[in-house]
Length: 324
Ligand SMILES: O=C(O)CCC(=O)C(=O)O
Ligand SMILES: [Fe+2]
Image 1 (cartoon, rainbow, N blue to C red):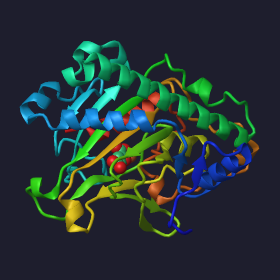
Image 2: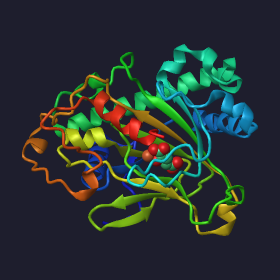
Image 3: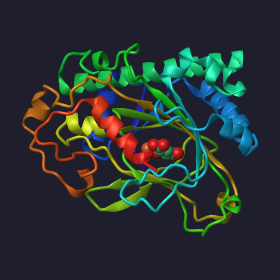
Image 4: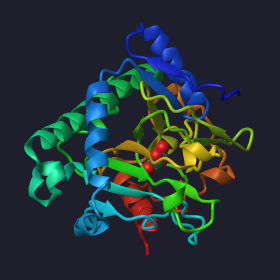
């Protein structure tokens, strides 16, 4: 298929058009844009806040270093390797992880985030991202002709582990001491059900890997649209019909672009921990025969027929990402 553009789901269009675009996304890479989402103002305030934090001196940011039990806090440059197939790589990025549980632990956040107005902003952003995911899940249930609450009932807001936000900063090349050939974020698939990815200043670099053509394709950065993708959980739920597509962030070729920071924000929607990764009870899935391809190896491990829960799967993937 052509990657001149991903399918666009315009939330102001009618439900037939939405179903059609979503179905196209489900049957191709599982990546799509969402337009007319209404989060624009919150999004730009979130980026201003994230920049304020990342521009702090390193020693101040390190006061909030990642807690690998709650997956909360600051990841310095080179702390995370998203490509679990190559343990020698380190991503040239810094990040701050805010799990949903932080909404009840305001005091452990850096001052910039716990400050009253900013904290309210974070709460609103969480809520609206969650609502958008639930909305998309309802459209998906309609496509699969299953109960409208099939997916939403597996993503209850007040059940663990909850959703999570990741603020990301990819520094300019002149701040990177190693060779030029760096990967800003290693090739990986996302672990949960749905990811919302907010881009900023139209900075490119995101690429998706199409299993059909064995090629990487650039995703055009559009500040006005959210890039949405399915994670591993949907690959399980759909017996591989919906792809949890591998993606990465590369340094742009253009030297002017390399001299600039790239900021992004990812919202990870994960099902409740006890949710079983069993196929969706839909006619569309029942008849689907799953054939393991080599790119699904990271998703489907050999587990002797034991049905994984979403919690087990996500913990296993997180442990691999932060095993050093
Ligand atoms: O920054 C980006 O554009 C992608 C980030 C990403 O894929 C992730 O953190 O899972
Ligand atoms: Fe990702």
